[in-house]
Image (tube, rainbow, N blue to C red; front, side, top):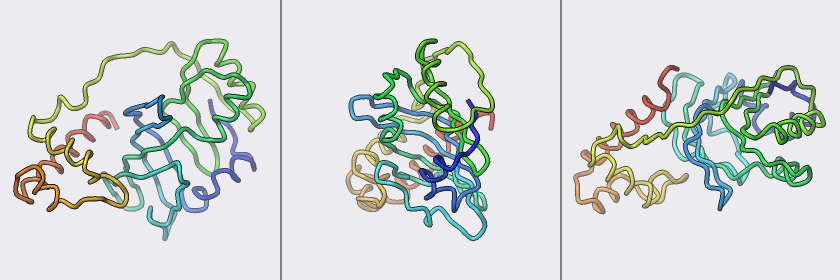
Length: 211
């Protein structure tokens, strides 16, 4: 559904809208329901004279890595806990849905994608009417397919990538640098960096196929 950006939305997203032209979640990689965490690929277009470093993200949002930068456009790997305000709405109105991609926000509009049964999607529409004016809605039957993103990588790339993740290389700020990581996996620093860069390029190319 597409909503007009109301004052309520602007107030909740002021930390973003003052500095970005748009933010789009383009790929949902993982949902951890037990801990309430999502891992996603986001495209962030900054306003003139701003960089992604100028955004002070809330505690529940963490940019793990900038995967690509093209002028003021950043493609990022983002980790986020489920949006607190939305969780409160979901609990209050007994909503059983999954927020999905694509989702988009700018000064002019916000787009929300969600998965749920007919009853819960109707309740979601009613809830969103309390947030802002709904301009467009569309419905389609959900289809699911098994995806194994790591199958595009070599065994060594997978080994180094997993070691990097487990040892905090993709934390923000990083807990370990490439030299320290190379010592842990028993490879030279240039080799580790090469494996990581090739793995990242292959993963992003697969995730963003068609864009």
